[in-house]
Amino acid sequence: MNDFCNYILIDIWPPSDAVISLAEDEYDKDVKPEPYFYVILGDKTTGDFEQEIVLRYGAGEYKMHIYNVTRLKAALHGDGDLYEIGGRSNVLYTIENTYPLAQPDDRTLFPSAHVQSESSEIITLSNDICSGISDPIAKLSAINEWVTTNLEYDEDSLLDGRRKKQDALSSFHNKIAVCEGYANLTAALARAQGIKIRYKSGRVRNSTTNRISELHAWVEAYVDKGEGDAWYLIDTTWNDDTPSNTDFFLQDGMYDFWHDYGVEIDTSRSAGSGNSGGYDYVKLRRRLIWN
Image (tube, rainbow, N blue to C red; front, side):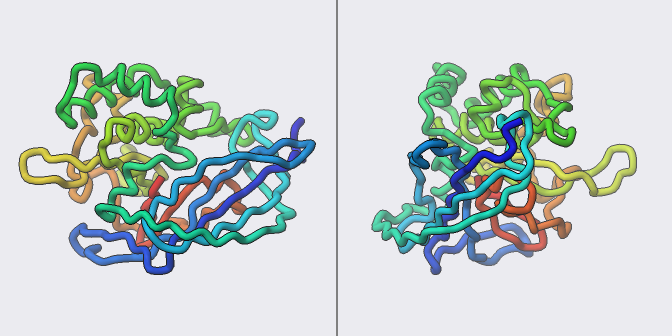
């Protein structure tokens, strides 16, 4: 079993003055982003690695730590997400980015470690799905239909030690995923069409107990439904379980009965606390994950 192989962990701290605007009812305020992460398997002999990283928060000084980490517990013989890592040492780089964002939310157009919208495979697939379509909402409808038709929910990945990678490319190749993979692939396909879309994580209502309790992931798209541009919820995981595949398509997330935005949930998830650390998130009574 490939338990003790070395990995490269990169965390990137955005500029100190970078903020994320949350204009949603009582959450109308700015908060500072936390670091985002890339996990890479380098060459086992030389330690060499190559990774393109997008400085998604625009102009300013970014601080990048590079760690050499060792997997302590493997999943799927090295094929799945990192579970436990340790033994790190680090090198610090400071990078100056002089290219500003046109709009603060433009970072939701850019690729990330788990939303590889710059991949030639993702771009080709997205263009095929949206061929002949010019309206953004119609494009999102076609993407929603493709994801719900071609992905299956992966119950096996819920078992200890069986979790597969949940980034967009892995979900596309495997054709199975949990909610994280559904959301990442949906986001990548939409960003490849120039549509602003953000990955979100929170708790959802359990249909049996009627309580907000289950951890879940979905996306929000920034489109105009006739009343000006706004963020609307798309849950391709749950749409995959409905006859029309559209029950959770472009819903108003702030008033949606099922997806919760106001419940405090665990915000301890980080690169060393039992997962892949592929996230760039902020905390505000809930966790917004900005993949």
